[in-house]
View 1 (tube, one colour):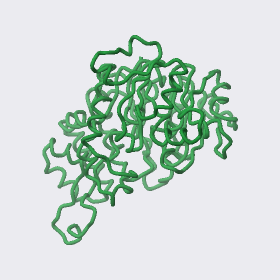
View 2 (cartoon, one colour):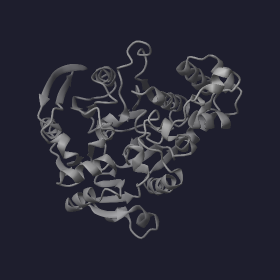
View 3 (tube, helix red, strand yellow):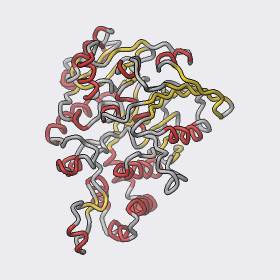
View 4 (cartoon, one colour):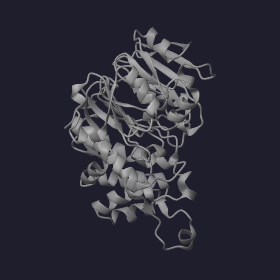
Amino acid sequence: MLNLNITSETSKLEAVIIHEPGPEVENMTPATAKRALYSDILNLSIAGKEYGQFKGILEQICRVYEIKDLLHETLSIPEARNQIIRELADYTKDEKLILQLKSLTNVELCRQIIEGIPLIQQTLMNFLNKNRHHISPLHNIFFTRDSSFVIGNTVFISAMAKKIREPEAILMKTLFTYHPDFSCNNVIDLTDNLKGVNETLTIEGGDVLVLNDNTLIIGIGARTSAGGVDHFIREVIHCTSVKNILIQELPDDPESFIHLDMVFTLLNNNECMIYDPLILGENKYHTVLMEIDNKSVAKIEYVDNLLQGLRITGKEFYPVSCGGSKHMLQEREQWHSGANFLAFEHGKLIGYDRNVYTAQELNTAGYEVITAQEVIDKKKSYKDYEKVLITIEGAELSRGGGGARCMTMPVRRE
Protein backbone atom coordinates (compact mmCIF):
# COMPACT_ATOMS: atom_id res chain seq x y z
CA MET A 1 0.00 0.00 0.00
CA LEU A 2 1.34 3.40 -0.97
CA ASN A 3 1.31 6.09 1.70
CA LEU A 4 0.32 9.38 0.09
CA ASN A 5 2.58 12.34 0.75
CA ILE A 6 2.48 15.70 -1.03
CA THR A 7 3.85 18.65 0.90
CA SER A 8 5.61 20.40 -1.98
CA GLU A 9 5.33 21.07 -5.71
CA THR A 10 9.02 20.50 -6.34
CA SER A 11 10.48 17.84 -4.01
CA LYS A 12 11.55 14.49 -5.47
CA LEU A 13 8.66 12.76 -7.21
CA GLU A 14 8.22 9.14 -6.10
CA ALA A 15 4.83 8.08 -7.53
CA VAL A 16 2.43 9.55 -10.07
CA ILE A 17 -0.87 8.66 -11.75
CA ILE A 18 -1.16 9.21 -15.51
CA HIS A 19 -3.35 8.12 -18.41
CA GLU A 20 -1.98 7.49 -21.87
CA PRO A 21 -4.39 8.98 -24.45
CA GLY A 22 -6.34 6.33 -26.34
CA PRO A 23 -9.45 5.90 -28.49
CA GLU A 24 -11.43 8.26 -26.25
CA VAL A 25 -9.42 11.13 -27.76
CA GLU A 26 -10.37 10.14 -31.31
CA ASN A 27 -14.00 9.55 -30.38
CA MET A 28 -14.66 13.20 -31.11
CA THR A 29 -15.60 15.24 -34.18
CA PRO A 30 -15.30 18.96 -34.94
CA ALA A 31 -19.00 19.20 -34.11
CA THR A 32 -18.54 17.66 -30.64
CA ALA A 33 -15.13 19.15 -29.80
CA LYS A 34 -16.54 22.19 -28.01
CA ARG A 35 -18.79 20.05 -25.82
CA ALA A 36 -15.74 17.92 -25.04
CA LEU A 37 -13.95 21.14 -23.92
CA TYR A 38 -11.52 21.12 -26.84
CA SER A 39 -10.90 23.86 -29.38
CA ASP A 40 -9.65 21.33 -31.93
CA ILE A 41 -9.49 17.57 -32.48
CA LEU A 42 -6.24 15.71 -31.86
CA ASN A 43 -4.34 13.32 -34.09
CA LEU A 44 -3.91 10.34 -31.75
CA SER A 45 -1.02 8.77 -33.69
CA ILE A 46 1.09 11.91 -33.22
CA ALA A 47 -0.14 12.67 -29.70
CA GLY A 48 0.59 9.07 -28.73
CA LYS A 49 4.22 9.31 -29.86
CA GLU A 50 4.67 12.54 -27.94
CA TYR A 51 3.06 11.04 -24.86
CA GLY A 52 5.33 8.02 -25.19
CA GLN A 53 8.30 10.35 -24.69
CA PHE A 54 6.68 11.91 -21.65
CA LYS A 55 5.85 8.55 -20.10
CA GLY A 56 9.33 7.26 -20.89
CA ILE A 57 10.87 10.07 -18.84
CA LEU A 58 8.47 9.58 -15.94
CA GLU A 59 9.26 5.86 -15.81
CA GLN A 60 12.94 6.71 -15.31
CA ILE A 61 12.09 9.09 -12.48
CA CYS A 62 9.42 7.42 -10.31
CA ARG A 63 6.74 4.77 -9.97
CA VAL A 64 4.09 5.30 -12.65
CA TYR A 65 0.47 4.21 -12.22
CA GLU A 66 -1.78 4.02 -15.30
CA ILE A 67 -5.47 4.77 -14.70
CA LYS A 68 -6.60 2.00 -17.05
CA ASP A 69 -4.57 -0.61 -15.12
CA LEU A 70 -5.80 0.69 -11.77
CA LEU A 71 -9.42 0.68 -12.92
CA HIS A 72 -9.28 -2.85 -14.29
CA GLU A 73 -7.74 -4.11 -11.04
CA THR A 74 -10.30 -2.23 -8.96
CA LEU A 75 -13.28 -3.60 -10.89
CA SER A 76 -12.34 -7.10 -9.70
CA ILE A 77 -13.50 -5.99 -6.23
CA PRO A 78 -17.29 -6.56 -6.20
CA GLU A 79 -18.02 -3.67 -3.85
CA ALA A 80 -15.98 -1.28 -5.99
CA ARG A 81 -17.64 -2.50 -9.21
CA ASN A 82 -21.10 -2.04 -7.72
CA GLN A 83 -20.22 1.39 -6.36
CA ILE A 84 -18.94 2.87 -9.61
CA ILE A 85 -21.92 1.44 -11.54
CA ARG A 86 -24.26 2.99 -8.97
CA GLU A 87 -22.57 6.40 -9.17
CA LEU A 88 -22.50 6.41 -12.97
CA ALA A 89 -26.21 5.61 -13.02
CA ASP A 90 -26.86 8.45 -10.56
CA TYR A 91 -24.83 10.73 -12.84
CA THR A 92 -27.10 9.91 -15.79
CA LYS A 93 -30.28 9.78 -13.67
CA ASP A 94 -31.14 6.55 -15.50
CA GLU A 95 -31.60 3.41 -13.39
CA LYS A 96 -31.64 1.25 -16.54
CA LEU A 97 -27.93 1.92 -16.92
CA ILE A 98 -27.25 -0.32 -13.91
CA LEU A 99 -28.43 -3.45 -15.73
CA GLN A 100 -26.59 -2.43 -18.89
CA LEU A 101 -23.28 -2.04 -17.06
CA LYS A 102 -23.70 -5.08 -14.83
CA SER A 103 -23.96 -7.26 -17.94
CA LEU A 104 -20.41 -6.30 -19.03
CA THR A 105 -17.21 -8.13 -18.23
CA ASN A 106 -14.65 -6.18 -16.19
CA VAL A 107 -12.51 -5.69 -19.29
CA GLU A 108 -15.41 -4.28 -21.30
CA LEU A 109 -16.70 -2.18 -18.39
CA CYS A 110 -13.24 -0.66 -17.94
CA ARG A 111 -13.05 0.12 -21.65
CA GLN A 112 -16.51 1.68 -21.83
CA ILE A 113 -16.04 3.84 -18.74
CA ILE A 114 -13.01 5.45 -20.41
CA GLU A 115 -13.96 5.30 -24.10
CA GLY A 116 -17.66 6.05 -23.71
CA ILE A 117 -20.78 4.14 -22.61
CA PRO A 118 -23.00 3.79 -25.70
CA LEU A 119 -26.72 4.38 -25.93
CA ILE A 120 -28.49 1.09 -26.56
CA GLN A 121 -30.20 1.42 -29.95
CA GLN A 122 -33.54 -0.12 -28.95
CA THR A 123 -35.72 2.99 -29.05
CA LEU A 124 -36.42 5.55 -31.73
CA MET A 125 -35.34 8.30 -29.36
CA ASN A 126 -31.92 6.73 -28.86
CA PHE A 127 -31.60 5.87 -32.54
CA LEU A 128 -32.20 9.50 -33.56
CA ASN A 129 -30.05 10.97 -30.78
CA LYS A 130 -26.99 12.70 -32.28
CA ASN A 131 -25.07 11.94 -29.11
CA ARG A 132 -24.32 8.23 -29.41
CA HIS A 133 -23.23 7.89 -25.78
CA HIS A 134 -25.07 7.50 -22.51
CA ILE A 135 -21.87 8.74 -20.87
CA SER A 136 -19.43 10.54 -23.14
CA PRO A 137 -15.87 9.31 -23.66
CA LEU A 138 -13.48 10.74 -21.08
CA HIS A 139 -11.75 12.99 -23.60
CA ASN A 140 -9.91 14.92 -20.87
CA ILE A 141 -8.86 12.07 -18.60
CA PHE A 142 -5.20 12.29 -19.61
CA PHE A 143 -5.16 15.58 -17.69
CA THR A 144 -5.08 13.59 -14.46
CA ARG A 145 -4.22 16.65 -12.37
CA ASP A 146 -7.78 18.00 -12.37
CA SER A 147 -10.16 15.36 -11.02
CA SER A 148 -8.33 14.71 -7.74
CA PHE A 149 -5.33 16.05 -5.84
CA VAL A 150 -3.27 15.17 -2.78
CA ILE A 151 -2.32 17.45 0.10
CA GLY A 152 -0.28 15.86 2.86
CA ASN A 153 -1.64 12.31 3.16
CA THR A 154 -5.19 13.18 2.11
CA VAL A 155 -6.66 12.87 -1.37
CA PHE A 156 -9.38 15.31 -2.36
CA ILE A 157 -11.88 14.35 -5.06
CA SER A 158 -12.57 17.47 -7.10
CA ALA A 159 -15.94 19.14 -7.58
CA MET A 160 -15.70 19.47 -11.36
CA ALA A 161 -16.99 22.60 -13.08
CA LYS A 162 -18.16 20.84 -16.25
CA LYS A 163 -20.67 17.99 -16.14
CA ILE A 164 -18.89 16.12 -18.93
CA ARG A 165 -15.87 15.71 -16.61
CA GLU A 166 -17.75 14.50 -13.54
CA PRO A 167 -17.26 10.78 -14.41
CA GLU A 168 -13.49 11.35 -14.12
CA ALA A 169 -13.95 12.33 -10.48
CA ILE A 170 -16.25 9.32 -9.90
CA LEU A 171 -13.55 7.06 -11.36
CA MET A 172 -10.77 8.56 -9.21
CA LYS A 173 -12.88 8.33 -6.06
CA THR A 174 -13.41 4.62 -6.77
CA LEU A 175 -9.69 4.01 -7.29
CA PHE A 176 -8.62 5.79 -4.11
CA THR A 177 -11.36 4.17 -2.04
CA TYR A 178 -10.96 0.56 -3.17
CA HIS A 179 -7.67 -0.12 -4.98
CA PRO A 180 -5.37 -2.02 -2.59
CA ASP A 181 -2.46 0.34 -3.26
CA PHE A 182 -4.48 3.32 -1.98
CA SER A 183 -7.46 2.09 0.02
CA CYS A 184 -6.03 2.84 3.49
CA ASN A 185 -5.54 6.53 2.75
CA ASN A 186 -7.83 9.44 3.63
CA VAL A 187 -10.31 10.32 0.87
CA ILE A 188 -12.45 13.46 0.97
CA ASP A 189 -15.04 13.84 -1.78
CA LEU A 190 -15.60 17.58 -2.21
CA THR A 191 -18.92 16.91 -3.93
CA ASP A 192 -20.39 15.36 -0.78
CA ASN A 193 -23.43 17.32 0.42
CA LEU A 194 -23.33 19.48 -2.74
CA LYS A 195 -25.26 17.35 -5.24
CA GLY A 196 -28.50 19.11 -6.08
CA VAL A 197 -27.72 21.89 -3.60
CA ASN A 198 -25.17 24.22 -5.14
CA GLU A 199 -23.51 23.27 -8.39
CA THR A 200 -21.51 26.53 -8.42
CA LEU A 201 -19.22 25.29 -5.64
CA THR A 202 -16.42 23.91 -7.82
CA ILE A 203 -12.72 23.26 -7.37
CA GLU A 204 -10.26 21.41 -9.63
CA GLY A 205 -6.73 20.17 -9.07
CA GLY A 206 -5.15 22.37 -11.72
CA ASP A 207 -5.98 25.35 -9.52
CA VAL A 208 -4.33 23.96 -6.35
CA LEU A 209 -0.59 24.29 -5.72
CA VAL A 210 1.11 23.04 -2.55
CA LEU A 211 3.98 25.32 -1.56
CA ASN A 212 4.80 23.53 1.69
CA ASP A 213 3.17 22.17 4.87
CA ASN A 214 1.87 25.62 5.74
CA THR A 215 0.94 27.32 2.46
CA LEU A 216 -1.38 26.61 -0.45
CA ILE A 217 -1.81 28.67 -3.62
CA ILE A 218 -5.22 28.45 -5.33
CA GLY A 219 -6.64 29.95 -8.51
CA ILE A 220 -10.27 30.98 -8.95
CA GLY A 221 -11.79 31.46 -12.38
CA ALA A 222 -13.47 29.33 -15.03
CA ARG A 223 -13.12 26.02 -13.17
CA THR A 224 -12.74 26.89 -9.49
CA SER A 225 -15.20 29.21 -7.76
CA ALA A 226 -14.75 31.36 -4.65
CA GLY A 227 -17.49 29.34 -2.95
CA GLY A 228 -15.73 26.14 -3.95
CA VAL A 229 -12.54 27.38 -2.27
CA ASP A 230 -14.47 28.26 0.90
CA HIS A 231 -15.97 24.76 0.91
CA PHE A 232 -12.52 23.24 0.37
CA ILE A 233 -10.96 25.33 3.14
CA ARG A 234 -13.51 24.04 5.63
CA GLU A 235 -12.26 20.53 4.83
CA VAL A 236 -8.52 21.08 4.43
CA ILE A 237 -7.95 23.00 7.67
CA HIS A 238 -9.07 19.97 9.67
CA CYS A 239 -6.70 17.45 8.08
CA THR A 240 -3.55 19.52 7.40
CA SER A 241 -1.38 22.11 9.14
CA VAL A 242 -2.05 24.82 6.53
CA LYS A 243 -1.62 28.37 7.88
CA ASN A 244 -1.69 30.50 4.70
CA ILE A 245 -3.77 30.31 1.55
CA LEU A 246 -3.00 32.60 -1.37
CA ILE A 247 -5.82 33.12 -3.87
CA GLN A 248 -5.27 34.36 -7.44
CA GLU A 249 -8.19 35.51 -9.59
CA LEU A 250 -8.01 34.32 -13.20
CA PRO A 251 -9.78 35.48 -16.37
CA ASP A 252 -12.74 33.37 -17.47
CA ASP A 253 -11.37 33.39 -21.01
CA PRO A 254 -9.51 32.69 -23.19
CA GLU A 255 -9.41 28.97 -22.44
CA SER A 256 -5.65 28.99 -21.93
CA PHE A 257 -6.30 30.54 -18.49
CA ILE A 258 -8.38 27.53 -17.47
CA HIS A 259 -6.37 26.85 -14.27
CA LEU A 260 -3.76 28.59 -12.13
CA ASP A 261 -1.05 26.20 -13.31
CA MET A 262 -1.42 27.64 -16.81
CA VAL A 263 -0.05 30.98 -15.59
CA PHE A 264 2.00 30.05 -12.51
CA THR A 265 4.05 26.98 -11.54
CA LEU A 266 6.79 26.42 -8.99
CA LEU A 267 10.21 25.38 -10.26
CA ASN A 268 12.22 24.94 -7.06
CA ASN A 269 12.46 26.41 -3.57
CA ASN A 270 12.99 29.97 -4.79
CA GLU A 271 11.97 30.19 -8.46
CA CYS A 272 8.62 30.18 -10.20
CA MET A 273 7.40 30.35 -13.80
CA ILE A 274 4.90 33.14 -14.40
CA TYR A 275 2.78 34.58 -17.16
CA ASP A 276 3.94 38.11 -16.46
CA PRO A 277 0.92 40.13 -17.76
CA LEU A 278 -1.40 38.40 -15.27
CA ILE A 279 0.85 37.73 -12.29
CA LEU A 280 2.82 41.01 -12.19
CA GLY A 281 1.20 43.24 -14.82
CA GLU A 282 -1.44 45.91 -14.37
CA ASN A 283 -4.82 44.17 -14.57
CA LYS A 284 -8.15 43.82 -12.78
CA TYR A 285 -7.49 40.40 -11.25
CA HIS A 286 -6.96 40.40 -7.50
CA THR A 287 -4.68 38.42 -5.21
CA VAL A 288 -5.91 37.59 -1.72
CA LEU A 289 -4.06 36.24 1.33
CA MET A 290 -6.01 34.24 3.89
CA GLU A 291 -4.44 33.40 7.26
CA ILE A 292 -5.61 30.34 9.17
CA ASP A 293 -5.45 30.13 12.96
CA ASN A 294 -7.04 27.64 15.31
CA LYS A 295 -8.68 25.81 12.38
CA SER A 296 -10.52 28.88 11.09
CA VAL A 297 -9.91 31.89 8.84
CA ALA A 298 -8.39 34.54 11.10
CA LYS A 299 -7.54 37.20 8.52
CA ILE A 300 -8.23 37.92 4.86
CA GLU A 301 -6.71 40.79 2.85
CA TYR A 302 -5.70 41.91 -0.63
CA VAL A 303 -2.02 41.79 -1.56
CA ASP A 304 -0.34 43.29 -4.63
CA ASN A 305 0.44 39.97 -6.35
CA LEU A 306 1.39 36.36 -5.68
CA LEU A 307 5.07 37.15 -5.20
CA GLN A 308 4.31 39.76 -2.56
CA GLY A 309 1.90 37.36 -0.88
CA LEU A 310 4.57 34.67 -0.80
CA ARG A 311 6.98 37.20 0.67
CA ILE A 312 4.53 37.90 3.49
CA THR A 313 4.43 34.18 4.28
CA GLY A 314 8.24 34.17 4.48
CA LYS A 315 9.13 32.85 1.02
CA GLU A 316 11.04 34.89 -1.57
CA PHE A 317 10.64 33.71 -5.17
CA TYR A 318 12.49 34.80 -8.32
CA PRO A 319 10.11 34.86 -11.33
CA VAL A 320 11.02 33.43 -14.74
CA SER A 321 8.81 34.82 -17.49
CA CYS A 322 6.89 32.53 -19.84
CA GLY A 323 7.72 33.60 -23.40
CA GLY A 324 10.43 36.04 -22.35
CA SER A 325 10.04 39.82 -22.38
CA LYS A 326 7.97 40.40 -25.55
CA HIS A 327 4.23 40.47 -25.01
CA MET A 328 3.36 38.69 -28.26
CA LEU A 329 5.70 35.81 -27.47
CA GLN A 330 4.36 35.64 -23.92
CA GLU A 331 0.83 35.27 -25.28
CA ARG A 332 1.82 32.67 -27.87
CA GLU A 333 3.73 30.46 -25.48
CA GLN A 334 1.26 30.75 -22.61
CA TRP A 335 -1.45 29.61 -25.04
CA HIS A 336 0.48 26.37 -25.53
CA SER A 337 1.14 25.70 -21.83
CA GLY A 338 4.41 27.60 -21.71
CA ALA A 339 3.97 28.29 -17.98
CA ASN A 340 2.88 24.73 -17.16
CA PHE A 341 5.87 22.74 -15.88
CA LEU A 342 6.16 19.57 -13.84
CA ALA A 343 8.99 19.75 -11.32
CA PHE A 344 10.10 16.19 -10.51
CA GLU A 345 12.85 17.44 -8.20
CA HIS A 346 13.87 20.89 -7.02
CA GLY A 347 15.01 22.63 -10.21
CA LYS A 348 14.40 19.62 -12.49
CA LEU A 349 11.53 20.18 -14.91
CA ILE A 350 9.56 18.71 -17.80
CA GLY A 351 7.91 20.95 -20.40
CA TYR A 352 7.07 21.26 -24.09
CA ASP A 353 9.86 21.84 -26.63
CA ARG A 354 7.68 24.18 -28.71
CA ASN A 355 7.98 26.95 -26.10
CA VAL A 356 11.48 27.97 -27.16
CA TYR A 357 11.51 31.49 -25.71
CA THR A 358 10.43 30.19 -22.33
CA ALA A 359 13.23 27.62 -22.52
CA GLN A 360 15.67 30.43 -23.30
CA GLU A 361 14.53 32.29 -20.19
CA LEU A 362 15.09 29.17 -18.11
CA ASN A 363 18.52 28.71 -19.66
CA THR A 364 19.39 32.30 -18.72
CA ALA A 365 18.28 31.44 -15.18
CA GLY A 366 20.78 28.59 -15.09
CA TYR A 367 18.76 25.63 -16.38
CA GLU A 368 20.43 23.25 -18.83
CA VAL A 369 17.96 22.40 -21.61
CA ILE A 370 18.04 18.80 -22.87
CA THR A 371 15.56 16.77 -24.90
CA ALA A 372 13.53 13.82 -23.72
CA GLN A 373 14.91 11.71 -26.54
CA GLU A 374 18.47 12.41 -25.39
CA VAL A 375 17.53 11.13 -21.94
CA ILE A 376 15.66 8.08 -23.27
CA ASP A 377 18.59 7.22 -25.57
CA LYS A 378 20.94 7.66 -22.57
CA LYS A 379 22.95 10.33 -24.37
CA LYS A 380 22.34 12.71 -21.47
CA SER A 381 21.21 12.28 -17.88
CA TYR A 382 19.14 14.72 -15.85
CA LYS A 383 21.12 13.53 -12.82
CA ASP A 384 24.21 15.34 -14.13
CA TYR A 385 22.64 18.79 -13.67
CA GLU A 386 21.61 20.77 -10.63
CA LYS A 387 18.98 22.61 -12.70
CA VAL A 388 17.60 21.12 -15.89
CA LEU A 389 14.65 21.33 -18.26
CA ILE A 390 13.75 18.15 -20.16
CA THR A 391 11.76 19.09 -23.25
CA ILE A 392 9.18 16.71 -24.68
CA GLU A 393 7.72 16.99 -28.16
CA GLY A 394 4.31 18.59 -27.78
CA ALA A 395 3.03 20.05 -31.04
CA GLU A 396 -0.07 17.82 -30.85
CA LEU A 397 -0.46 17.24 -27.10
CA SER A 398 -0.40 20.96 -26.38
CA ARG A 399 -3.47 21.46 -28.57
CA GLY A 400 -5.43 19.52 -25.96
CA GLY A 401 -5.08 22.51 -23.63
CA GLY A 402 -2.58 21.40 -20.99
CA GLY A 403 1.06 20.72 -20.25
CA ALA A 404 3.30 18.43 -18.20
CA ARG A 405 1.80 19.43 -14.85
CA CYS A 406 -1.74 18.96 -16.18
CA MET A 407 -0.90 15.43 -17.35
CA THR A 408 0.32 14.19 -13.97
CA MET A 409 -1.32 13.51 -10.62
CA PRO A 410 1.51 13.13 -8.07
CA VAL A 411 0.58 10.94 -5.13
CA ARG A 412 3.91 10.78 -3.34
CA ARG A 413 6.94 13.03 -3.11
CA GLU A 414 9.99 12.62 -0.91
